[in-house]
Image (tube, rainbow, N blue to C red):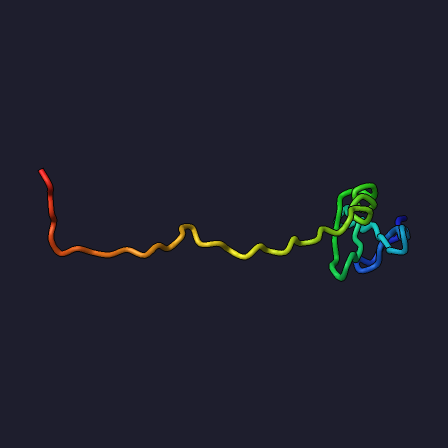
Length: 83
């Protein structure tokens, strides 16, 4: 007769690059904590790839430039046509 595994404990534990990865039979996925977030993947290889993937750094935003250059203008109240 089979032995029932508790759903809160992984059936298999694997340590990769100092990070513990656990396999959960009930959900059929691998779970691990990376950079403060719990992540799950369908395979051990995908978990390893996620751990090896470099951290994306956000580029600093450039200051927004105005879409047009304001220019000085004047308004005339009459229209002079030289025909």
